[in-house]
Image (tube, rainbow, N blue to C red; front, side, top):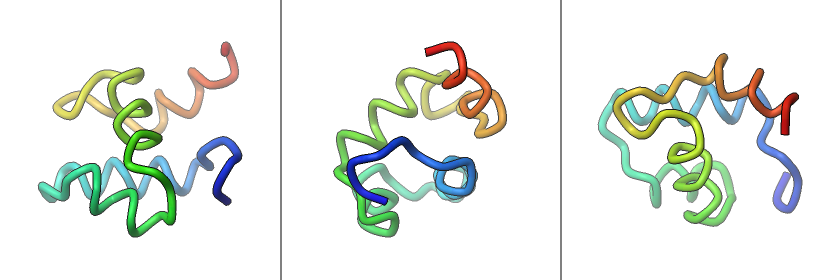
Amino acid sequence: MPGGRLTEDERRSIAGWLSEGIGYAEAARRLGRPTSTVSREVARNGGPGAYRADHAHRATAWR
């Protein structure tokens, strides 16, 4: 879904890939999204060591 908000499933995928050591560029390629979308998402929601998909998804309701 390029151009729209990340879905909860996409956020869960990002979290899983980060825990496997997959980088932003590869995660973005798998999602069909720009690398900047993934890097901003992670930076905005705790960073690579603390990113949690459930927290990130709830936080979008406040933005």
